[in-house]
Image 1 (cartoon, rainbow, N blue to C red):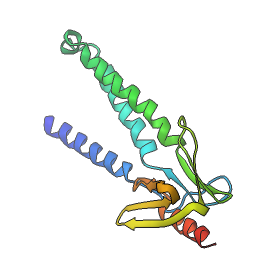
Image 2 (image 1 turned 90 degrees about the horizontal axis):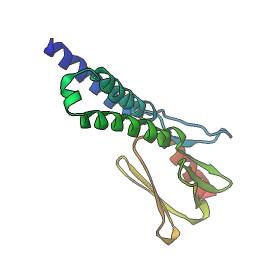
Image 3 (image 1 turned 120 degrees about the horizontal axis):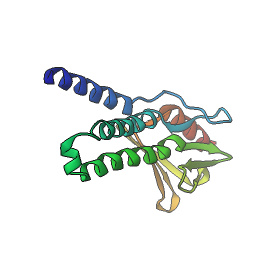
Image 4 (image 1 turned 90 degrees about the vertical axis):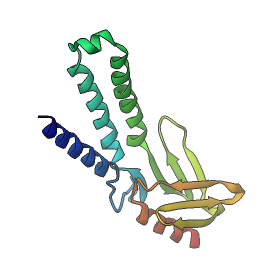
Length: 160
């Protein structure tokens, strides 16, 4: 039985890993322009939360967990942290509007970078950074969906 359980958990872990790196080639904002969004993490993080929630509920009657209730705090804490943290990935969006790169990451404030201040788009493998005057930069995470279309669009806007 333990071999089967190990195989199931190994497969589930692999699937979750693939899900975190899943991204679409193109993302569009409300105006039909290319944007950046987290695609895989916004589904993967809540699944982690569900796992820890179910693990905690499954062990409610276990004598070991009743003797050591701090284990429940850890499991339910991870679950709560995953659900609250997934809000960031669901609402995260980077778009270009009226010559400004806007990063929306609710509950955080909106960050704006003017395209007139864009000095360069640096690419080193999977790492891409938009460099602005004054030392400001925005690093485009490899986990973001729609990267290539967004970078192509920003470069076209930069040229005029």
